[in-house]
Every structure is written in C-alpha cells, then in structure tokens.
Image (cartoon, rainbow, N blue to C red; front, side, top):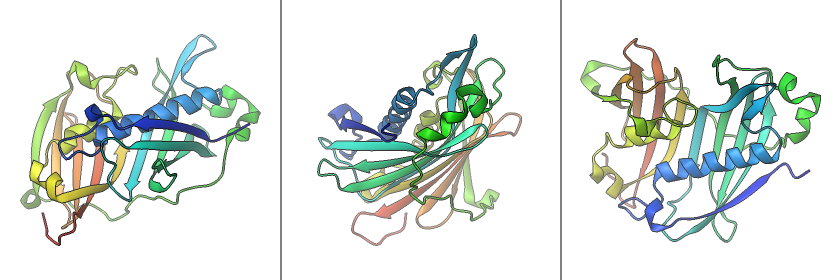
Length: 254
C-alpha cells in the first residue's frame, strides 16, 4: 500500500488574489481536497458506517510557505497520516513546484465525529486494528508558537459578523477556511502589496452555525505577526489564528 497521496493543482486566474499569487482561501481548499481524497483512498473517508454518518473535522492547522505561489504555476501536494490517536490523526503535507522543489509544508490535526451527536469516536473501534498500517511516520516538524497572547484594549481592534449561508459547509457548521478568509479581510490591502503572508497557525474551538453572531478581535502582536480571535456571543472561542508576514525585499514595519 502506498500511504502517501499525491495530487496536482493548476493555479488558474480565479484561484489568485489581486497580487497575482494563490489566494490563501484557495490554498486551504487544495489542502482539504487532498485530505478528503487521501482519506477515501485509505478507506477511512467520511460517510455512513453502522447506520450512522461520520465526518472528519479539522481542529488544528499550520501552513508554512517558503515563497509565494504565483498565478499560472502547477503545484504538487503530497499528504500522509503521521500518527493516530484515540479519536484524532496527525496529517502532514508537502507543497512542491512543477520541478518537485519543496515550496511549503503543512500540518493538521483531524478528528472523526458522529454527525448527529457531534462527539468524537474511537478510530480503532471504527476502522479496525489494522488502522496503523496506513501510517507513514515522517513529520514536517511544524509546531505552534507557544508565546501567550496578552490582549489589551489599547492594542486590539474588533469587528463583528453574522454567519451566513455561504459560510456553512456540508458538515453544517462554518467552514474552516472561511475563518481564515474572514480574518484576512480585516487587514488593509496595502499590507498584502508589500508583505508576503508566509505562515498561518489556526486552532479551532467551538462550532459555529448559521446566523451565529461572532466578534473578531484583531491584535497586532509585533512587527511581523497578527493574532485574530473569533468569539461567540457566549464568549466561547470559535477560532484563533496567527498570521506571520515577511516583507517583499524591503525592511519596513506594517
């Protein structure tokens, strides 16, 4: 069994943003596409088992790019499962250009949940003791920044949104990539014209549903990173994201 899934994407014009590079929303959907296809090929895809419907949900995501991905490029992605826990899997990704040069890596944690109860399930009980056979142990060594974020009213901005129909996916909650896209819309366009967004770290919390009201807290951490938190009306955290920027050949702060 080949435990590594390989997929190819062309960055057509409609996948690019105004800078002419691959939009982060499109990149995120490419990664989700790989994840779903690989899970199906490995026999652990979302679907109906024992008359119940189960689905994979992403709980953590890190994406690190070495260089921008430009419009017109062909990129190749590889993905594999590096570790299996009781109800979660670690998934690795490598992003390559058409010459197979690595231009980015990613890491995600996925959980399998019962679509009705929204509770996680035991993966070995679901798929059997041979589940470990699909693991390919190599990792990308990506880890979350453990520096604590200390929010203060003097260093944060806030806005709000109502979860709309276009935010909801087949799992009946706000799609994981929509959080990233909503957060990116908080920043001025000039930021993207002079800086390269090379890394994101996302941690998902409580699910959000149609018509939920969310508060977005936008906090500049330092000269190269911004933190965005999504809070529900109950003050429960729905998502938090750290964005890391590099300048395009010039040494300036944003």
